[in-house]
Length: 216
Image 1 (cartoon, helix red, strand yellow):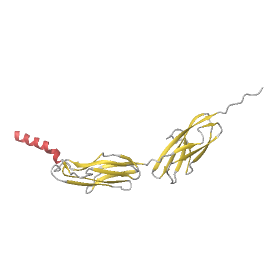
Image 2 (image 1 turned 45 degrees about the horizontal axis):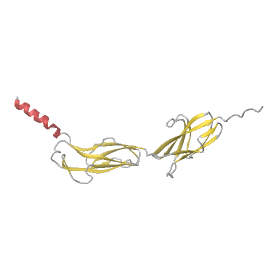
Image 3 (image 1 turned 90 degrees about the vertical axis):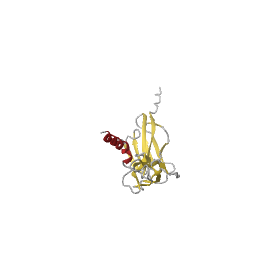
Image 4 (image 1 turned 30 degrees about the horizontal axis):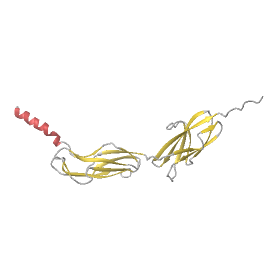
């Protein structure tokens, strides 16, 4: 009975060493914005005979049009990483909005899932004035500094993100409005150009013209 118990204890104690060994990338679900880069960590997962056998993994992307990936991890064993510059560095460059996966050459499983958000297209709203009389026209202009390609500008009434009161969408960055109800009102615009997007809002104060005192 003691022999059986001793054998069971040995099996339990050594079980983790004979698990599934292989490449690992951390973190497993990074989120990056298009145009940005990230540095992840690649290494060998303990298991099997990883404690005494060498490893070498080359990390790649399954969708290089969305995100490019390069890097490697190597070592003589799980506990002994090779002293090589860049060992374990997994470089990710986000190209366009979408989802890509990191894999290692020779392995079919996804080691990490990368979510790429659209690139920010900085947009500003320039106004002739921020305070107008009721019934007076005001001209707004959407400006994207340093961007020369064609963009679409969608204008809305209300706070940024509220799309229930659309005004118009076109490539014309100019918008003319007539001040109506007295008080503070908000106008916002969303600029879209390919996978790039951004939004900005502006507040306009509308005041009633003063009535002249009647002459006696």
